[in-house]
Amino acid sequence: MQAHGRGDWAEAGRGYRGWLEREPDDPDALHLLGVLEAQQGQLEVAARLIERAIEVKPDESMFHNNLGNVRVEQGRLPDAEPHYLRAVQLEPQRVDAANNLGVVLSRIGRSDQATAILQQVVKMAPGFADARLNLVQHCFRTGDYGNAIQHCLDGLVTDPGSNPMRRLLGAAYSALGMDTQATELYQRWLADEPDNPVARHHLQACLGADIPERASDGYVSTVFDQFAASFDSKLAKLEYRAPEHIAAWVDAQAGAVAAEDGAARWRVLDLGCGTGLVGPLVRRHARELVGVDLSAGMLQKAAARQVYDALHQGELVAFLEAQSEPAELLVCADTLCYFGVLDDFAAAARRALVPGGHLVATVEAHPEPDDAEPPYRLHIHGRYSHASGYVQSALAATGFETVAIKAVPLRNEAGRPVQGWLVAARAADAVLPTS
Ligand SMILES: C[S@@+](CC[C@H](N)C(=O)[O-])C[C@H]1O[C@@H](n2cnc3c(N)ncnc32)[C@H](O)[C@@H]1O
Image (tube, rainbow, N blue to C red; front, side, top):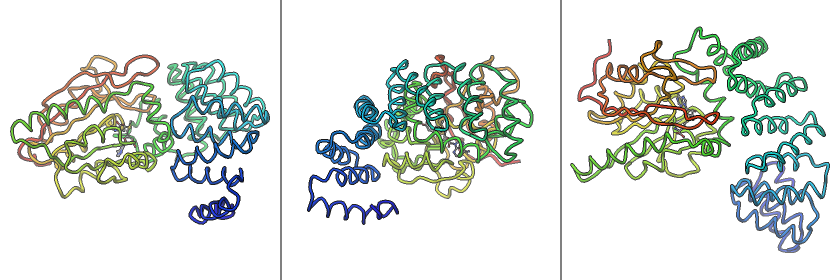
C-alpha cells in the first residue's frame, strides 16, 4: 500500500500479488489490486478482482463505489448504477458515492432521480465542489439553464474563485442570450485574474471589441484539457458529424484518385485532431497519419486510439509552417471555429501540401445571411463563425481552388442543428508568392 501510495505501481502490484498467493481471499488485497489494475487501464481484470472482493466481503461500500468507477471507465453506465446505489445504501453518508450515482443517472437519462440525488448531496456537503458542478452539468444536459444559473450563483457564494463554476455560469448566460450578465461576469473574473485566457477570450467576444485573430493558445489548451475526458461522450449526444462529413469527402476523393492511378496512399495531417475522432475514418487512405493539437489532454485520448503514426502537441499553423515533407491531404474538423482570420492558416496549409494536394475542413456558418458583414464573427459562446465567401477568398488568395463547398449540419446545440460549411480545396500547382 505504501508503494501504491507513492505511485510505484510495479512494486505495489508485486506486493499485492505476493500477499494474495498466501491469502487468496483477502478482500482488501483483491480490491486494491483491482484499483491498481484500473489505474493502469486493465479494466476487465480490475472488475473481476473487485467483484471477487465483493463476493468475500459484500457489505464494504468502498468496493461497490470503486466497481462502479470501473464500469463507468468501461462505458458501462447502467452496470455502474447498482454498485453506486449499494454503496450509498451501505453507507448513507458517503457523498462521493451518491455524487457518482447522481452523475450516472443523469448520463443515462434518469433525470428526476439524478436531480433529487445531486441536490441532496449538495445539501449534505455544500463545500463539495464537484457535486455542485455535476448538478450544474446535469441542468445543462436537461436544457434547464435557469436552474444551472441559480446553482452556479450558489456555488460562487461558497467558493467565489471557482473558475469551472464561472465558466459554466458564462455558458448558461450565453445559452439564454443574457449578454449583459455574461459581460459583467467576465469583467469581474478578469479583475480577479487579469491573465486568465478564458475570461479574456469570452469578454472580448461579449464586447465585440479587440476581437483576437484566433483564440489564444492558452484559451484553447485550458478549455480542451478540461473537456478531454468527456469530449467523445458529450459530442456523441450532440450528434456531432464533422468527422463523418470530412471522411465522406475523403472517401469519394480517394475513389477518384484510385481510379486514376490505382493507389491512394497519402501523407495525411489531422489539424486540431483532438481526441482523434477523424483518425480512424481516414486511416485507410494514409501511408502516414500525423495529428497535431494544442491540448495535451485531447492528445492523450487520441494516442489511446492507436491509429496515428505520430501526434504533436503544438499550434497548428506553426506546425504546418515547420513541415519539411509535404502532405497530400490536410483534414481539419471543427477546429477553424477557433480561428477568425484565416489568412495565415491558408498560407501555411498551402505550403504544407504537394501541388494538387487537398485540404478538407469544416467551419461554422454565420447564423445570418452568408454575405452579412463582417465575414467572420466571434460569438459569446467562444467560437467563431465564417461566411463561405470569406473562406473561399482566403483560400484562393494563397493558391487554392475550391473544389467543393457544401452546407452541412455539424452537431446539435440547445436542440437545434449548428450549420456549417464543408470546404474542400485543391492546392494549385505553384505556391503563390507572399506579398
Ligand atoms: C472541437 S475540437 C475537434 C477535434 C477533432 N478534430 C474532432 O473533430 O473531433 C477542436 C480541437 O482543435 C484544437 N485546436 C484549436 N485551435 C488550435 C490551434 N490553433 N492549434 C492546434 N490545435 C487547436 C483544440 O485543442 C481541440 O482539440
